Length: 113
Image (cartoon, rainbow, N blue to C red):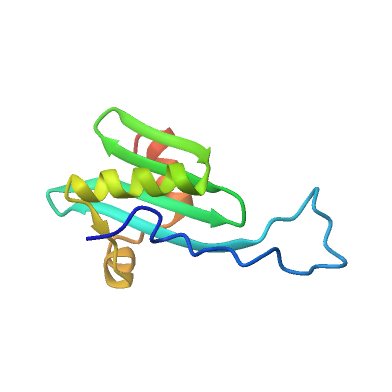
């Protein structure tokens, strides 16, 4: 069972980027995927984890969409809620087999494909 916030590592401090322009750059830490099951092939969630926020794009039902930036605590709670409903971390094999990408998920969310 995943713990709330497990996918978001504790931040030990901001990285030192002396030439970084904070107005145009963010540090993407990683992309995490959840999916419901083979019984619900269109139900995917993508978590883009940054230093101070998590951008979530998801299809959680036939007419339920999430496209929202949230705090790591809020994203951890959503992650835990989805796992409680039977969702699981998508493996690299599942992501590859379904040819899933953030771009494809965005197209599904907004294009109805």
